[in-house]
Length: 161
Image 1 (spheres, helix red, strand yellow):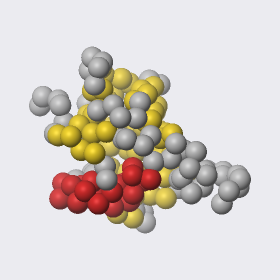
Image 2 (cartoon, helix red, strand yellow):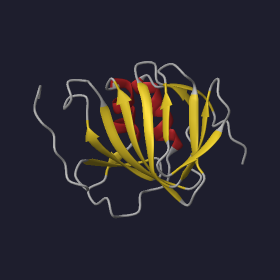
Image 3 (cartoon, helix red, strand yellow):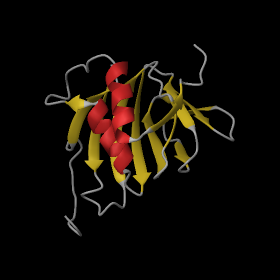
Image 4 (tube, helix red, strand yellow):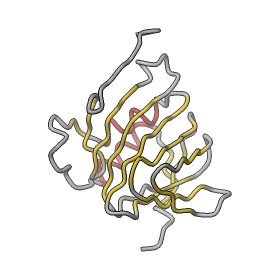
């Protein structure tokens, strides 16, 4: 809805079990006239994204809790923690890995990324009760979602074990 205000309480939003964690859409492209895509994600230790690119949006994340190791092309890898901000320009290859027990991030994609939103919806599954433990990561579903959505996956996570 164009121009409609959006106000959500702390636990409101569309919940998806995603890659061993919980993703909550707080504002979608349809809700923001494609200005931004905003979501929270809770992830377990060891969760690592493959090296990938968002060709259609800048990605910014704010660490609400935990520690995350971040790799962005052209910069040294860095571990960021609570209250840290990372901004990744569109087209920059990047990946991250949760190094703490859990991590809780607020992610903003500007403008709203249809590719990313479609990817998360295909890779995730509805979480009618977000208090339940999420199912384990499903790499086959992840790969199929990347192929169907147009997400540019460049390779495995660039982090040693």
